[in-house]
Amino acid sequence: MMWNAIKGWDRAQWFMLPALGLAAILLAGMLLHIVKEDPGTNSYALLADSFLHGKLDSAQCFDGDCVNVDGKSYVIFPPVPAVIAMPFVAAFGTGFHGFAAIGFACLLGSVFLWWRIFEKIDVEKQTAVWLLLALAFGSPLFYVSIRADRVWFFAQSINFLLLSLAIHEVMRGGRIMLAGAYLGLAFLSRQMTILLAPFLFVLALKPEENLISFKWPALKRVLAFGAPLIVAVAIYMAYNMARFGSPMETGYIHIAKPTLDQWSLINERLVHHGLFSKDYFLFNAFHLFIQGFHVEWGGSALLSPLKLDPMGTSLLAASPFVLLVLFVPLDRETVIGGLCAMLILGITLFYHGNGFSQYNAQRFVLDWAPVLFFALGLSVSKALRPALAVLVIYAMGLNVVAMALLATLHQG
Image (cartoon, rainbow, N blue to C red):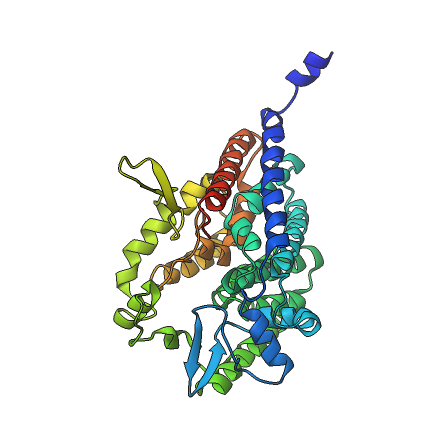
């Protein structure tokens, strides 16, 4: 009887035990990092403290991405993650060291929201479990969550949760104004994510509704969705104006320091090539699509691992399950979502950074990853589920290897 029951199992079920084991290892590593987080590593603590004191500038800097303009030091990043950190900084001061814990909470919140999103698009429960394992432990979301003690990754952790909330509100609640508000807050965490607006708007449409309509119900929906986005853009422009004297000046260009004595990759690129340049395309494209998991070896016989490549592993090498998106049905949601994702991806290919530092991820993918996981939910049939399971286990295992190497090499 037991043998007959086992024979009836979906093949993917056989892989769940090793997947849960890998998840337990990765969770343990994340919790250990939360406990060991040091104070004074996340500049959003400084920006939150500035907001609490009615200022935009900060007296000091915890990382190299602060700028000095007219004798004042600024944390240049968008403001919403600092606003979220304000209650904690108010209670514990700028030495607050619970950012990784907040990142972990964001990860749990995102997983819960995507479970509900997958329910809405009728993803089979077993498939949804594998997709959630992929999201939590096999995608760049794991890395930015575990490293939320640093300013860049904390912003992306907050941003992904806000994008997930926006999609959830569109699909589960039909509250399009609230979805627009969440997308506006995401824009005030990571600017590029506002380009997902057409995808979110299309998700709000019923199948029988036209994409473009000038009837009042359609125009009312456009206004409800667009009003919070306009407010968010206006806030950011006013924020830039108050800091740097121009609504379009984000401050990133001021990171370049031509007189810097010590060499810096980012400084070299900004001084000689600028924020955006065609010269970055080949490097960024290679790392996004091709670069493998790379360990640098040393010693006279090249037998001693020295370090992991901080420029990261390509999306296809680190998270090969994403290739199953090629089976996605083509409808207006997936086509428009794909176009939005390609626009964000295309712009970042010309950007001066590719997400450095990272080791087994390309973290800028998270700016359009909601489209990717929505499409994967529609792509993975029951027949493809065993393939998804194998590829997710591989991605999780690679993260375990990366975490072990980083700990052994005292890197990251």
